[in-house]
Image (cartoon, rainbow over all chains, first blue to last red; front, side, top):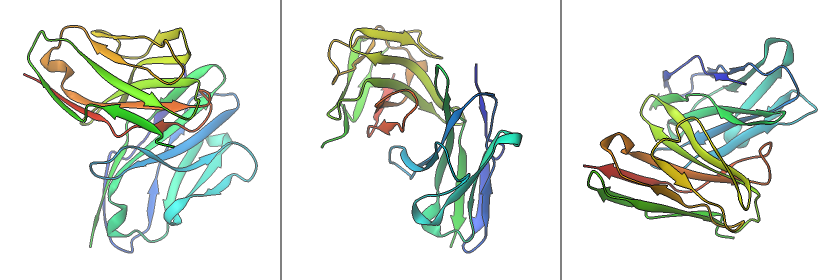
Length: 112
Length: 112
């Protein structure tokens, strides 16, 4: 079975700080990778995804993620966070015959 | 498109009561799933379906039943509610297991 690890459970930053959230997965075959965001009181929505091609993908609101196959990683980055980025972030992977697998999530708090 | 809809938004039950959480999507998605979200636990898969008439168990299926008689609807039944089932429940759908998941707004359930 595949698994997804998010190393940072809680992150607290000040506005304008840079962000990097780690995500590692265990499946060795071809994968599709996702980052979802859940703003307070809302449902999950897609932030960005990687299926193939350029391993550096750009999403909404200035977020980007880099797929490094050799490290089984798909880390999320943003050069300068805003207060409105306060949310919970979930990494997810699909691949082969496996159902989508989500990480446990990272809670990000951005202080103004 | 309404996307993924869930009803009710909030529900309070007494221990031992049964109820059905409704989920519907109008995107002609084959794959549908139910998750529960608890603090510190991320998203845990309860049941999923790859098409009408086909359902399977996820990570935490005990105490829940599902059926998929149509492509659009995927109700979740709580057979005999327990306080441990207090949670926020999200329904999601996608074209296939490999694609982007679209989430509903969630149902917040309190079992007394």
